[in-house]
Length: 240
Image (cartoon, rainbow, N blue to C red; front, top):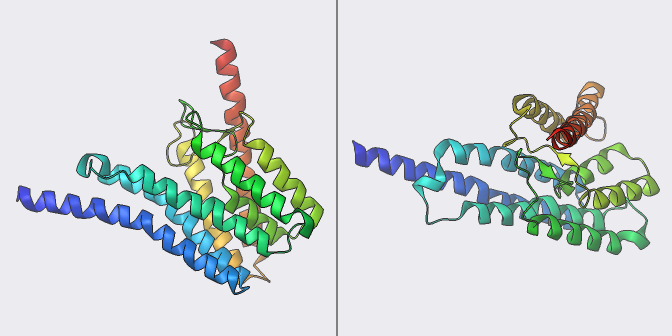
């Protein structure tokens, strides 16, 4: 019986790693869609990759992959997948779209890569409270809202610049799967936001107004929670 349990745990651990690695294939499908000019389908693939990224960490902790497969570095696999799905594919999406002025496309892509490289290489990117320090290279989220909101070239460029600068400011952005304070509330907001966003993409260009509203309010709520966490962290440090 113990051998069967051991085989089951090992199989589950490898399945979790396979689930994480599936994000790489999803990223490839997104690239194909962008190359074919099907931006809406590409954004759906990016949304699916976000779901994988949101869930895989919790699954890994549930299955205890570190203990079951100590010889395999799931973090490195996660980093590779994350860089593809949250940075590289969104940057390519931006470059092939008409979201910002054409003359700014290449500089914007370079800025996205540089800021993201800083985030991934920063050993202090996650605080002791399990929050991101600075904006955590979630360019998939930025590009998604630029795509669905239709704010115009210069507004979009301003948001890109703002997100770039936020990588280097100690703003405490939520880390839904690991944060200690308001974790359940944040996870609920994330689930509602991701689900409504994918539905918006499926229904695009005429999404249901209530689903659209849920998606926009959801991302605003995440930034509000992040602002609260930033102020809370600041007050703790001052009082300490």
